[in-house]
Length: 315
Image (cartoon, rainbow, N blue to C red):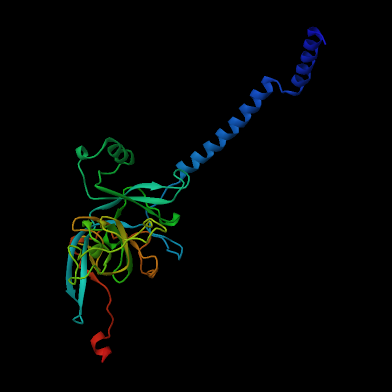
């Protein structure tokens, strides 16, 4: 076959393929229609987001509702005696000016959550992205931020104050914090190991952990073996902590038992997951006090201890 005949066949093939390819005008018009449809859908979604207004009003809590949590500062521990004379170990927490700093919705962020800010901080002590975030939301500079997942019926507008009366005495809460850092510790302190003999031939190995593996097989130390190492300084959650008393005048909470962290550390409090409180007693989505209420004159609220003396009931 000559070169001229091969070129003719190639041109005929191109012509047959080109007849099946739509014209550039048709392609551009189709793309324009699809692009305009997508832009119209996006515009409708943006209008829905703009038209969504979160109102600050009391609601009705359902069994599936999930309220926001709050941020508190651990003040320390003490002990109180209840009306029956029983000693109650107490952790004192200070709720320092909690407000809603950001609302996250499924239309914009893909989740339903509230960002809570605690305390106060000067602008010069914040980074530029943090300052820009607070200015964009129109709220004061906060010292600590925490995001709490909530249900859609528990959303609160930006700037809403969440105080200590968000919880009620007698309910159970989960408290999350960073435990005290204890540095590098041995196996006896870190894991409660027995150690080696105190006498009978033990020399300079009284607090040793002993053997850490086997012989030639497997010839290694398995991962996760309990050994000396850094102890503490990790996030832990204490569940089902009982709220003994709250003081709205000073924004203080008295919880029964211990909570993680040292004095001055931040802890995060939310409704208990396992020992769920009575939804009829909880303010939803948070507590809304009367306009003429003077918080400085409010008396502390103590949990109901019942009318039966536990010491007499034991007899």
